[in-house]
Amino acid sequence: MMSSGVIERKVAESEQASPVYTVNTNISIAEPSGIIQTALDEIKKQMSKRDASILTLAELRAKHPLGAVPQDLTWDSWRA
Image 1 (spheres, rainbow, N blue to C red):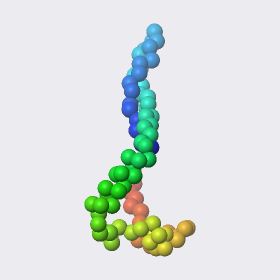
Image 2: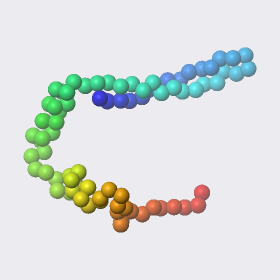
Image 3: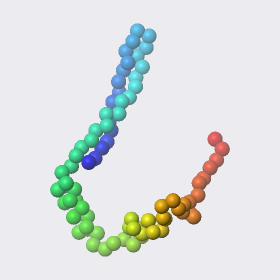
Image 4: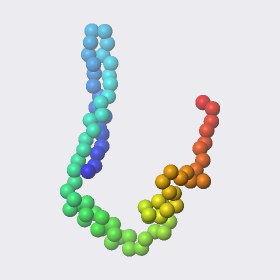
């Protein structure tokens, strides 16, 4: 399933004013599973060797257990 949105401009007409506002149409498109499987199979063929710099989900979970805050996580802040 893919989703996207298209911003549509609308005008609210009245005697006093005609303000313009936008509406997101929220379009969703379903793809057959066969097409998705074909794409995944092609990616597997192209990527014959696993990139060790990209951690698997199991590796990420082991590195950052549920509820744990990574030590290298920092927040930048400044006065507005």
